[in-house]
Image (cartoon, rainbow over all chains, first blue to last red; front, side):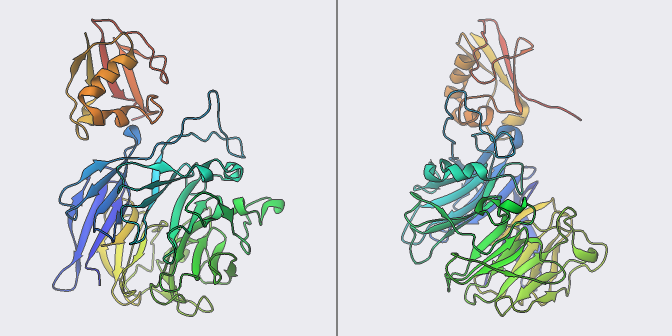
Length: 369
Length: 89
């Protein structure tokens, strides 16, 4: 049961904890005024990581070995130097810079891989570190793959890797999801890559490209730790589930109030239980009818419950980004944060929600630690 | 020896008081400054050694022309300012 939450926002990394009275309070902030993209806790040594996006000064990475009391700046990935005169453009003719723009996910390796970290970045980069983030190496096989040139901006102006899932059975098997560029597998720790998006559709693409792997825009992808053949994706076009280790996907339709959204989390022990935060697709990107709700399925997507107790049910326009919904290791405590600076916590799997904050900066990510 | 000064907004991240360095170009001068403040490099330049998009360098009041190679000449009496490229309000 986690009693502490980290909230990564446009203006700092905030910490909240559960008090003896059973309420959640903010207690401290790191990097106040700075844009914190996300945070990660390494379960192997307890270290915290915070990714910053300074804008003028670039993306940086900091690590804390004392739960946020002090931080040290560590290494950042470097993109390869492009060939002389090379100007890369995406398939729409827009320039893709070969330089680190932002961290979009940080994922630890397995317990058997101490010090190994994966980083997904904008634009479209995957890096790994074997020394807890001191130095980074690009996974060049993915970057150099011709199909990578077909990726396009989704959540940002350039494509980005936002989900990196390391197979709990075999750390050489890694699956990444790209906005916008599909789902890619490696079985050999990054040497070779193949796309597996069968079953997905991209209605926003020209008819000829609706089923193309590179057209798919998975907003967030998760794998059930206890049943690693079961995967969930909140896709731009809806909710998709895989029961064959992410080899093929089944669309789950007619979910009310909307199948659009960004985040998804799956119960750590029950692969049939997952949570989503729906929003009106897709040009508006606001909650349906101004009501903030969470959707939960407990039967693998056959049915959904729309949970709202304790959440604002009128004139609310909170959008929840892909990393801004988290679940603790028990599967009982959930938290999510919004673009309008609200954070809510549930201690009973989403049945009831407590308001933790209403006036924070825009929330990029939340994380139980 | 030219003088290099950095925007105060950088000081919050990396201590980098003004310094006096030797160098015939902006690149040489900045390298000398980075030798004093190693962490500063990644805040001013990208991974390819080019000036970050939202940064600006002025030599004696003139913005440098070569943002990629930093080959603009400097003299011993030059004042080099490393600033944010502010635009808008």
